[in-house]
Image (tube, helix red, strand yellow):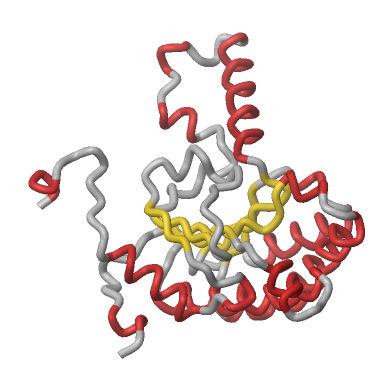
Length: 246
């Protein structure tokens, strides 16, 4: 029996976030340039999106390009941006067929103009879809996101739009890029690294963390199903005791 058949579809995490790591190392192991790994990583994205939609996951967020990634060699950044454009153009038909709604978080205006335009067009085209919400974290920094939220709230307080006593966790969350997305219950990181890497720091406060040694280009839907099955075996207590939960 495969992992898919063992999953209890009545107890799925509503939102799964994934740190897609290992493209460069995967390519290096094969004697190829890092860009080769990014191209093959796209195949994993396609399979994971289809697998998540297949079992009824509602939200999937992929750490696609961090703010820190701008510091990588120029040729690699350029190749990633070109790959992003071509992938969006190729996958838009598939997204429509699978009823997937595309979304982004991060400082999208930092992307090259053509990349930003294609991304916005794809978001508009899929806006009416009612299935899986696929969020790409692009030019994203969680610390910067939190800082921007603080600055916005502070400005509102200065202008008399908010009282300090009214600033609750819910109000703070509403000022993050993920305002309309529930917090992830499951965070997956590939490639054997045990770091969060500045990803959704506020939102994953109570997420279950799952780490796998598989490099991202080798990660497929059966690996996703294995992670979900592991998640379903855990007891989520949120500060309470097992007796209270049960």
